[in-house]
Length: 261
Image (cartoon, rainbow, N blue to C red; front, side, top):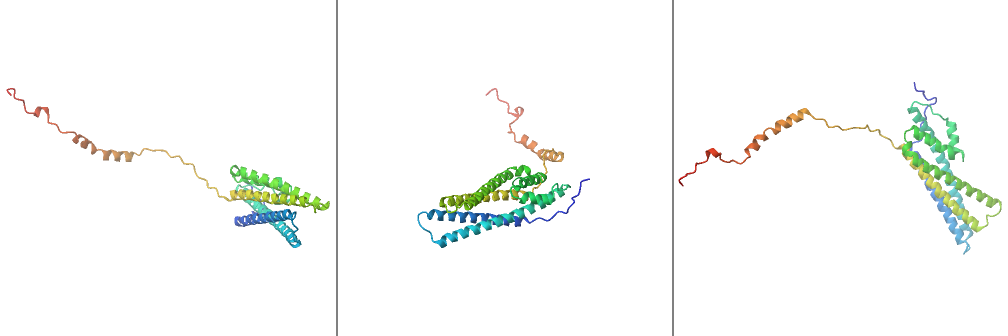
């Protein structure tokens, strides 16, 4: 007898909500990349001409606001996506008559703790795909998302560490160093956007409803009634074939030739 779930299945966020959050994150990451790119261009322009202090301050404020907005959007996406994953796993395992093998606390920790989530969150998604019977179709999208996410996280960590070291060692006034760090941040945000796009593909693949189509095999079966009907309809054609033969007089009916002639 299949075991029943120990905890009730929660209602996760609607797919439309997850889609809106994903779009919002992509917008915020794009704005952050544009803000850093604008700052980089201003730094390059500052080499040849002195910028007005208000322009430089405005660029810095815009960059900071874009960074905070992107960070808040990513945090919101992490919470919404984790909640969706937990509820989806519980629903799938409950449909199979099984108990969710991992507790909700374990899933929350594995998905939200930095660096830890780089390994465990994709593992949880793979487990869900296998339990849901979608792993064959999701293997490649999950792998792409996993690789992009790890690369994005490692590059972002490296850029953050370099920026902090520059501030601590008073290298923040080095224009070339600041420009290089700014351009690296642009690459980080673009790579993060690619990771979010890959995550969206994985999510959409889970939301596609699969329809089981029964396998049918067509076999030609002779119908006796239809065959008899065809024979009856074809029978009147036989005399017509005989009547269509050309009429020639019989040899015995021909007039005898006159030998005297």
